Amino acid sequence: MRQNRVQWVYSSRNIRELEERYDEWAEDYDRNLEEDFAWRGPQVAAEVFARYVPKEAKVLDAGAGTGLMGEALVKLGYERLTGMDLSRGMLKQAARRNIYEELHRMVMGEPLDFETGSFDAVVSVGVLTLGHAPASSLDEMVRVTRPGGYVVFTLRPDVYESHGFREKQAELVEAGKWELVEVSEKEQVLPRGEPDAYHRTWVYRVR
Image (cartoon, rainbow, N blue to C red; front, side, top):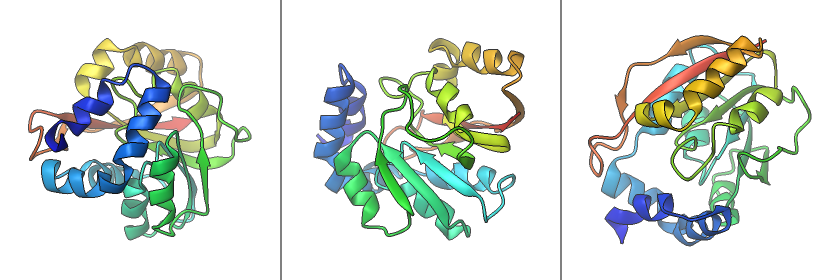
């Protein structure tokens, strides 16, 4: 099952099944991603994030999982981290890192239980993808970010083109909700298990 864990999770038929599968995977998640896939998405995204977001920023890690992105940010000097994820099992693992001020069980694509403008930045790595968080998730990510703050996320190029992200991102620009600051070159993020999987990191400034 190990090499097929990613596909197994991506094939979830609904949010409940997705949550259950992540709950089941949670204890082995970090080890499997390292040993079987050499997952480097958090490190790649954190380097881009740090070019724009000051270290004192209050940051929401949206789709935090076991806290790998939070850990990458802490290594760069960020301390004010809030995490959210749909899986209680994954959040339990994230809590063990002792790096988040708060952890919440919430679902991307649904209304988030945060006040408007609560965060200086929102980051989401490996979450806006097939069978996970839909393009509509971006609306709430923008809402909970203060004007002048940043929304940073990763997308596979094929998902950007085929799952409504291109249209949603353009819609938010046209509505004056955000402006594009950077989109990175393609980066290989699963070199061992899925060498053909690439991400781009997108950075928007909220208006």
